[in-house]
Figure 1 (spheres, helix red, strand yellow):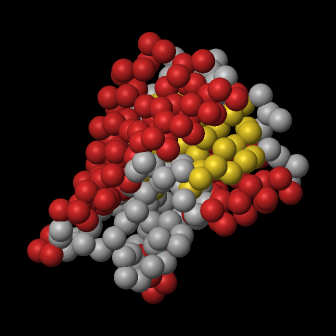
Figure 2: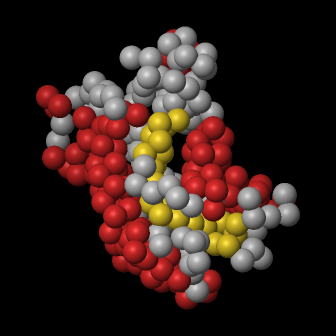
Length: 251
């Protein structure tokens, strides 16, 4: 088993899955967490097939007791947490005119409060690592752009930017680096959903507007996450990096 331990939330599919695999390939023991048990187990199986180290732990980031319990267990077993990737999130089409309070609360509870819960619970383990680092997944919508009929999602992702910058200052004295990634449009189960996102045709149309000529792949984000967590980014903290093929600079 690796001497480095990484925890990834929302790691069963999409960006989280790609990041978990990339971290395993970089030599971490990866704790894959999600509420999608079958998908999470498949990620672990794929990592182990490559002779790398991983385990699956079910985690609902909206459940404070579950978060505290799991992170306490991880700290107890490994004595430290070297890398933390806070990726769990949801996106739904929710026009403001029909938006219910509970729909707003659900999005914030997963995308922003859930991030805070896991970060908070991981602090004892992060403080024991030699070079701890945290990556929070935001989005170019919220970081730079808006998105019609997705106000809760955009607001939550904007909040992630504030969390990154404030946490970077708060924990710099502990040697904990905190950075974020604001992905552009990435091909995933979420963006392929025609009801809550762009769908297949929408992705194809959007690709034509991207300066690099395509939408992103999950691996494009994962590779940046691995860099940010590595010692190669040792003097980088409090930054949110847009990984979007040039979308935001072309507007």
